[in-house]
Length: 130
Ligand SMILES: [Zn+2]
Picture 1 (cartoon, helix red, strand yellow):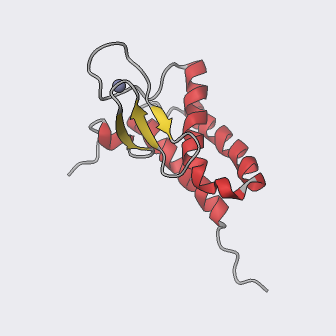
Picture 2 (cartoon, rainbow, N blue to C red; picture 1 turned 45 degrees about the vertical axis):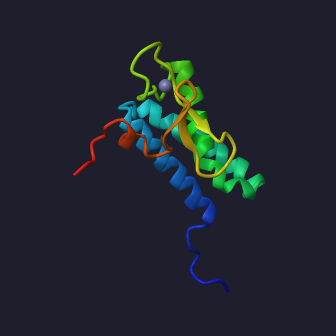
Picture 3 (cartoon, rainbow, N blue to C red; picture 1 turned 60 degrees about the vertical axis):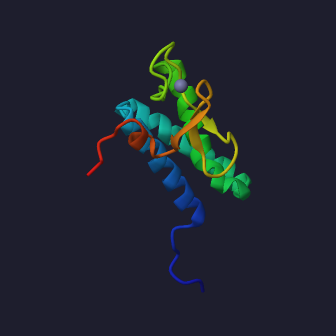
């Protein structure tokens, strides 16, 4: 017999990806109920995906972030807006690497890493400084 069934690494990775992307949505003040459901949809699809390809577990946060970004673009517009460039056209940040571990939001216009996925609030003068 196995010992008590712990939360599987896969579930932990999905949970972490969900939490990171939600944190960035909250930082951008776009975490409305219908937006949160976009995250849930992405996590459900990526659960299937990662069950087929467990090696992709480390890529989940970046993938969920990109799924939500795409879904938001259709419904609401660009997200997350670049907090680095003060002038010019508003533009969205991109996730890099698109398929890799340790995903970051980057501004291709300024050529800078803005924040790790999940830490956008700290890059945009978020709420938790003490
Ligand atoms: Zn920028």
